[in-house]
Length: 291
Image (tube, rainbow, N blue to C red):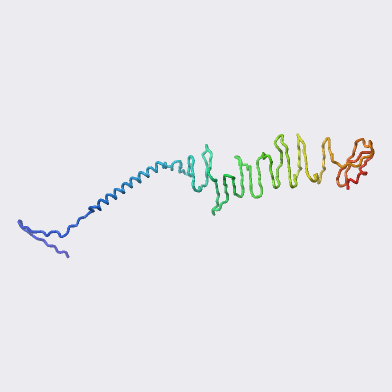
């Protein structure tokens, strides 16, 4: 319970009031006040400097409502004008250039493009280095503008879909295994040579092998035997003149009896030899050549 006291005085009466025992001042005074003002001023300077730097960065980086500088943010992705340099890997779904310009990928070391599956494993890789171009994939294909496959490579075969394959090297082409093609021909006025230095050379076709030299000759050179074999047909030598200069020659008869005429004899094993022509056949006289 609060107790209040009231004093009633009349005019002319003087009452002395007790002096205040202590005086309390509210606020910051002295060096504290000066430090506070200095701190506020420092914050204001920092705020102005940050504002100026922010405006400078916005101007230098060309920030705009549609993007930053040559980088524009569009509904279907990002559009980048001019040349750009990437210091770290770039992960994108599609890279394409403008309709009126080409796309250039350049690096001081190599350019590597990887394709990954959902587990993050590399399923395809294209690496362009200073020494070679490396492709790692299950199948590599090159298509024409019409979508026709021009070159296809996989683990089992290499397929060339062009109408003509031209090898311009001075040493020709070297194949370690078989080659399947409907036609082999050289450039005009050039010789065609099929050679196997250390192994055999075989030409097979289900409907026949046709060798033609319209303006030259055909030579078959070998260290061992040349075998011409037909299982169901015949071997035909169709020419105005057939030369067999190295056939074995039987002993000659009396001088002037043959008048320079000879007959070609065949052994049961197919060996051919020449015998001096007579009134009748003389092949039996030299049948020892068949042994």
